[in-house]
Image 1 (cartoon, rainbow, N blue to C red):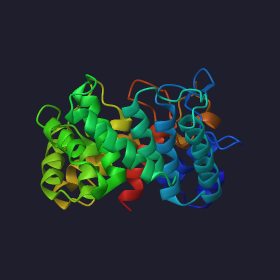
Image 2: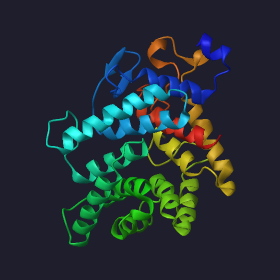
Image 3: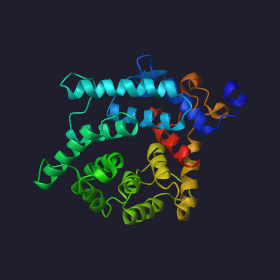
Image 4: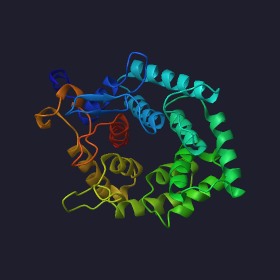
Length: 292
């Protein structure tokens, strides 16, 4: 913290430094930290997808290139092992989640877009033929992650699923982000306007996304990231950023029971939940970097 003060570090620098501290010697990214109990959880649900989010954000920050490269190489080894039939702990079984994980790995800099395009085409074909029954919300959420990585190469059936789901689930920050990559201006504007309606600028949790009963830092950060560069929505984005920054554990606001060495620079999951995860910090960092 003293070094950060000497260098005039901003919140993004603190966030990047925390993510960097979560990268082990082999390049793996920790799954979560319980700072009051001083427990570091190594793996958990959607582990690789969440790790890819953190790695991509760290790379976009640019302040820790060697660690970002080490983590990227670890992630590449993990999915090479999984896709070649090896046993990889916490690797997803659902082909949709596998494709979404590869999508975020591509965004993190792992060269796998051709493989991702193949998996996306397979998912689109299954959807067109009435494949396995799926939660349409989950399908659209992950399909948008795939579209963000593939851009113009996104199968029409997958992108249509994202557009169609907006009517039922208007909080769709991944769809807004993907609309830029796909080049769909109409969906970008429609989705962004819906995001703004979910980001109250007043109230007890001003700026926090109303997609969940208690606003989540990660979801709010993704929404703020999706609204980057849209001048008409600057107020809503600013409120979301303020909510996210209020959750960051900086030297002057780390609660006494929390291990400062484990927590400094991270973001609490919600206003009432101290859980820290690299993907939450990654979403916050991505939003902050996008606003620079």
